[in-house]
Length: 265
Image (cartoon, rainbow, N blue to C red; front, side, top):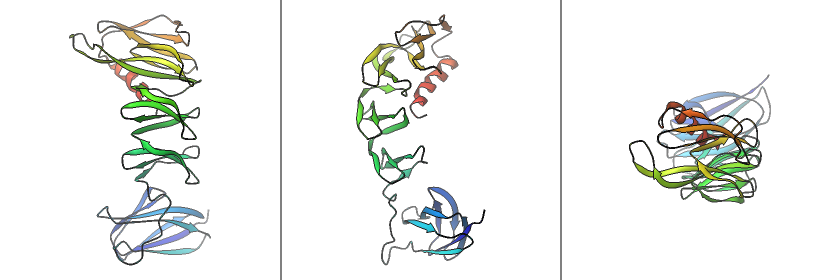
């Protein structure tokens, strides 16, 4: 495929990013040559001091053509044209037409037309599953839809992802944490539906989706013994219980981590 050549020259040592991906470093007043297809790109040049930067939209109109871009990073003269993305401190790659963005420490979503889908008001936000994304504010989790509406209130201590119209939720309560008799906050997991109706009350140490919608792995027990079983949305056991050897076993840790990763997948 024929490509165009973009030559970038800067008045200062800087790092060059194209569509948020690092491409090259430039020494002051030297050329950096990049091969690009036709299209519009977000080009960021960041001074090595990590403070001064230029961010702009740049269009390659023709292939087999050389383009020259001069960048001024010193704080003098007229400001450079700013990209519509320049207000964001971080933009994650687009997926299904949406990208997570961060302003300061707060997260939201935009679409490919640069329209704000979810405003940057959340301490954390997960990926969209079945049109819903887990979001966190003030240490509590809920869900927003693809219009930015909070459809599940932010009242839960943790959540899993939405699958088949059902969502694992966590509420913490005070209790015995381990065999040594230490007390603290213990996670209790249950299931709600997308209308925030409680389907299975919080009672399990861990609860997460299986490959089949409406079927879950549930873990329950005491600090001395615990077991895992498959259940349905009616909280009926579908398989024999499997015992865990002890509270701190590696398998338990892996299951716990899987639940907490679910909201980001």
